[in-house]
Length: 260
Image (cartoon, rainbow, N blue to C red; front, side):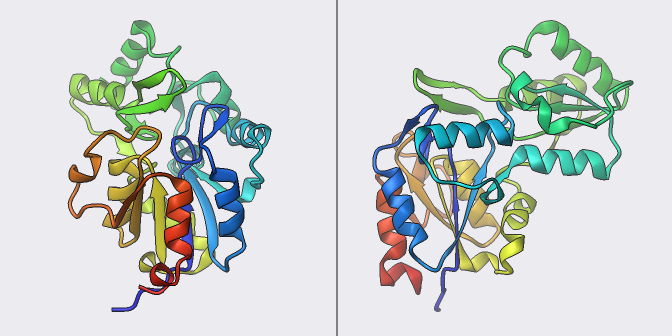
């Protein structure tokens, strides 16, 4: 069966950069990808900073990326909050708060959890617990287990969301990767089908398994949070496992992978 690739989704942290450093060769690889006729969308679960701050970081590193090319889990969370007219207790990093400007937070009827290392302390988590056992909704911007920093792997928001679920006997609504709605929303503007999309990322569960479950192809890169044998942790396995983003671009741009 032929499968023509029209759109490439690219994870950011761990795939083309780690904090303030480019993953070697990623900028040149992106330039090569842009010369193709493929649509490109950068999709990220990053919640420790607003999209504006994230874009500023990427430009300081040297990437040429526009705001309109980025789709974040923060964006998806804000849409959900507005749709349901929620008043959230925001357990998010201070650098992400500008994404929630204009949203009512008095008398919370929901708890929203992102990556917030300075906020995950007992008093705040206990406040969230009390809201949840009294009927508040729990929204996880994402549930990543860990992420990569320059100093190594660090806990993501997933363990804290899971702890709240366990304590309050509730289930979080997840809005970021690996949710199907996240991937479909990211490519909605391109008017393409999931089978015409390919996802490049370093997280075998959130990036690759999530994309493949909604019909896309997944390329796992061995950078960022990748750990040996991650490709064995999902079924079906990643469509491809490659060394890094430049190699992923090489595969996509070859005639063999543009027309599958």
